[in-house]
Figure 1 (tube, rainbow, N blue to C red):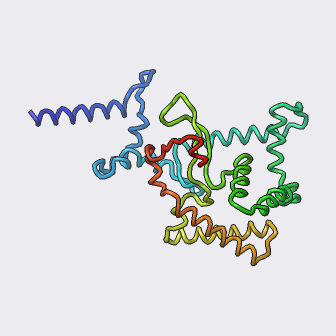
Figure 2: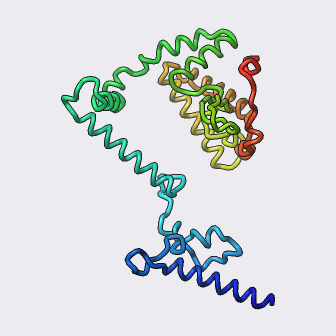
Figure 3: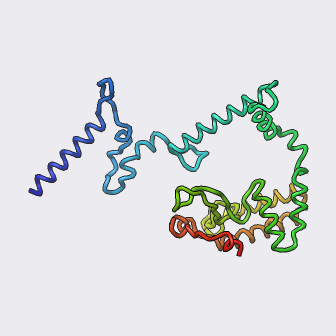
Length: 263
């Protein structure tokens, strides 16, 4: 009985694979199922089913040297980026676009960011008022005020802040606040001791030094400021949860009232 069951199961499996691999299309022609075409029979599915099912696809679609990963979502994103770029370039090329039209606004906005000659001539002059406001901070209230201002115009200092669907009440939106304030991708970059992590921290510190020099600091001041900022971010990283600890949706859901948040 058991032997017959196993034989029947094997027959059904092999038959289903055959029809998946050699199914007919609407025209009655034999077609190859894309999923089956990615199977690498050289890999034992009992040892690594993922590679068994996908290895041929990865061999046919290697990760570009310039990218950290590859896949269908990257292909979609690249396609979208190319379409947006085309819209921007074509809009900027219109010399007599109707004032106030979408093409005029898109074209002008794109050109303003790509006009490197004008941007280089202006330097950091457009940021001086912001630097002055930061230099005027004297206490924690000043930090909170400036952080809220930056949240309102561009970045997300100290923490991330967004509005989206409530994880437990799909009919409502909720305000979400998450850990943040790090320039490097996550806390591990600040504490890993392998050669690559050490190199990244060194390069990041060099980058900070260069940024402070652009802001007008001399060489000594730039290095000191970069070192202090690295210490600050390392302290923030130490208090941050590890990436793997943020994957639990139940632990991430800590709903509180606005009054409790302020407290």
